[in-house]
Image (cartoon, rainbow, N blue to C red; front, side, top):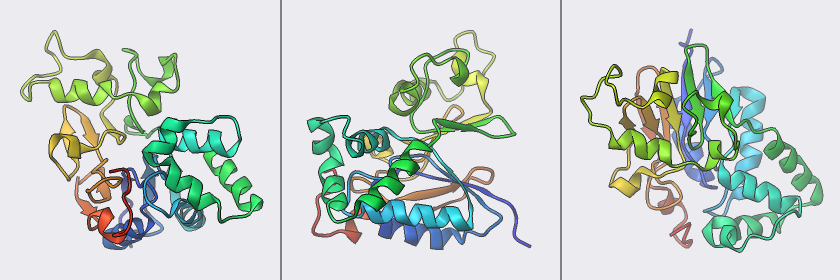
Length: 244
C-alpha cells in the first residue's frame, strides 16, 4: 500500500505539458493529497486545456485548489467585470486567445472552478498553504484585505531577509511567522534570486520555480522535501514567448 503524501504544486501558468510530465515523475496515487498553489493560467497557450485537466484530476485524486492572483484576473474577465490591460500584458493575452476557441458552456464550467478556489489551506499539522502571503501579525484569519492572500510579496521578502541563524526566541523574530509550523507559497518566482528549485527561508517554502518564464514546474513532498521537476516549461512551447 502506498504511503499517504501531501504534494504541493507550484504556479502552472498554462504549462499543461509540463504539469503532465511532473505528475508522472512524482508517480501520484489515490492516497496522495495534491495542493495546488494557484496561478493555473496566464503564460503559455493551454489555459483552457489546463483547467480541463485539473477538473479531471479532481475526479480521481484529493485535490485542493488555491486561488492565485492570475486566476482572479481571469475570473473577472470571464464574468465581464473588468477590462485590465495590465493583465493582458502579463499572460492574459494567451488566456484570452485560449478561451476564444471554446463554447459558453465550457466558460461557465470554468467560472465555477474559479469561484470555488480557496484563499488558503491549513492542515491538521498547522502547515499553511496559500498563493502569496499575509501581513497580519495574528495570522490569516485576521487578514483584513483578503486579496493580500494572493497578491502579497512581503512574506517571502521578510523570510529571505532573516539571518539563517536567527531563532524564534529572538526578540526581533517576526511574529507572523510564529503562527504556523511551515508555510508553502508560490507567486514570486525563485528565478528572481537566481534559483530554479524550491527555496526555504525561515519556515517558508517557495515552490514557484518560474514555470511562466524559463524555469521548470515543481511538485514537493511537504514532509520529506523530496521534489520533482519538469523540463523547463518554455521548451514545451518553443514558438511562444510565455511571460518573458
